[in-house]
Image 1 (cartoon, rainbow, N blue to C red):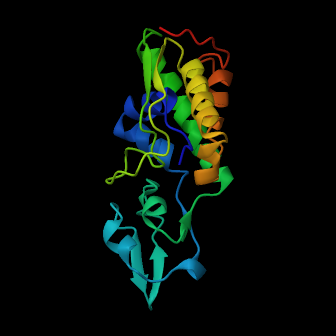
Image 2 (image 1 turned 120 degrees about the vertical axis):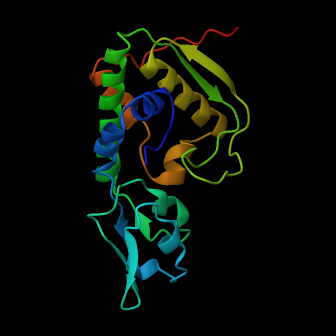
Length: 195
């Protein structure tokens, strides 16, 4: 849903309360394209909020129950459940806002390590592992969450020869990086120093 997961996403999602996670996800409830559905019914049993149900031989979403977790967007191989760019952008902005709030809690005293090892197409939130798209590039460290994410994004895309994140998800993964910079979380400018 964020298009890319690095320090900002881990800080924003991992260092906030359940209420904070709910706030981030409340605007990321997926849309549903009935025309793509093959009625496999996997989504009915997979939805952790029990928000997906069957009515008159059709799949429906109860948006009151939906938590916006995005599990259905990952599970559905036909792409019946999806996010628009506007939905994804709002989610990423909220992730950056939550990351900024977490940094305030740490009084700015935090360091970040991004492991660019076995890059998979899906988030580690998923209950299943995917085959890596990119193998080991290295490990990055920084005291700037924005800089390390920009460097990580650039290195993975360079290794792939394209913006592999956008190609996979149709979501601009740099939105959270740009938003983080706007919020004063850090700078997109970086210098790579190999050790």
